[in-house]
Image (cartoon, rainbow over all chains, first blue to last red; front, side, top):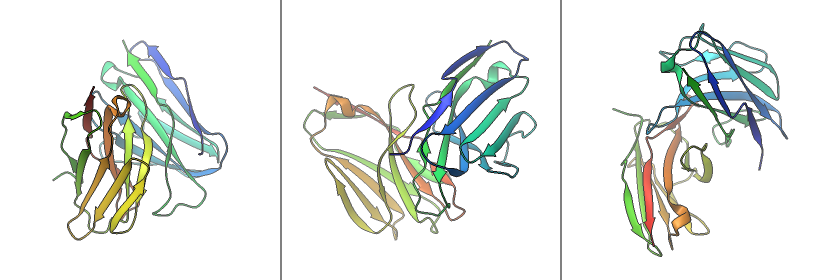
Length: 118
Length: 110
């Protein structure tokens, strides 16, 4: 199956700093990538949809100025958490859709990034 | 009303028995349905997907879809301790977004 990588896998930072998370599709081109956040004992919540070459679409309640998303190429999307605070501590997971998006396409998930803000 | 609903569990299943997981969804326009397994601290991994009404079998797993009832289920036959995980039901709704249920924790006891 298709492989999606994320880097870093784990990051600890001080409150007020910014953290960048990279999501790469390793063996396919992804027109669309998704960013999810998962708090302990909760399900994945979609934060934003990222399309190559265009602005990301954010879900309701997600601050676009705080969670900056850049999808500069067909294999790379980045999520930057700006001025991180302890409440941003979570498990961030990206996923990628190969090729042309359709209702039947499988999304491939990255391994996730555990962010801890002190 | 949540878009995708699952019983949170835990669902305790003896080794070798059948685990039955249920999921309901609210968007009648949903077209594709996925079951993911998630181990603690890991990201979800796809087990099965189903698009058409009826049953779909893959090894020890069977997915069942009933669009009229807006219901999808997953059966795990011959449950193994390694099947102990949280199972996430995901539905791609009519807007093309994948919506996840809260997950059902399955515990397979030896």
